[in-house]
Length: 329
Image (cartoon, rainbow, N blue to C red):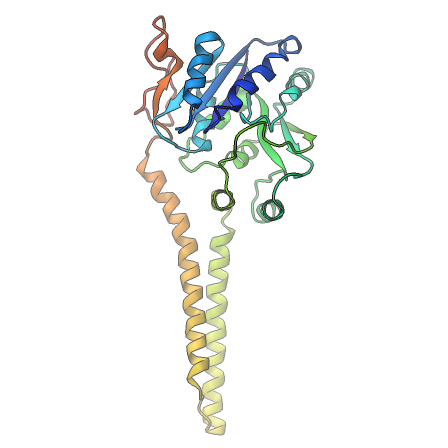
């Protein structure tokens, strides 16, 4: 079986389009299919579309969260619910080409690959500022982290059950899937394709959300910011000691004490700013630790397709189940 995991947030227009696009590929796909749509607290008619789709098609399953938990939580929930020996993750907006699926399946079946990923060869259609910062993020993260990430890589990928189980073992609350997929290893090859526009609707990813998401990736997979804070603190301390020696020697030899409060105030402000910057970096890491120690569930399920099927149990997952526990069907 091939499990298709689709996180959805305000995607009422694209869900039917994605389902139709994949169904047209049925003759080219050997495994049987199951769809797992994860409604991440959408405020539009996404859940209504999923209900209708699940009523018509027995191969369609859905999970609806009690609120918006984020795409990372939706991906994790979908992977937990997937039953297939092959699992693919793709967005609902058709920016991930469904027609690549037969090729991806053939690559895994004919080789020893554990994963076939996809990457964009360009960013046409995106704002230039967003594209520039995206490229700089990949350059930076690959310099400061031991976990290498492919520039332009999408979450859209086909994985074997072994790799999916390995990803599910990483039950951390602060998730960055692009890094987790790379961290677990396994044999992976990428298929390149030109960037695509959304089929319908509007993206929920603003520049600020993407910026915060990139910061999460850096904090989750690198200690470089902490090392930089330590280096800057040590350098400031050394510079201050040298300046103090210079001032004392000048006063003893030339009897010329340091004058000028503007320079003194500037130095104090500079050192104060460096201290606040270092505290902010350390605080970001402490905040992540704080969230992990709370051991809150990564997501809470409110409804599934089984809620509307009298011949099935009431729910797929317990909403209070710990994220590191397996969900029983």
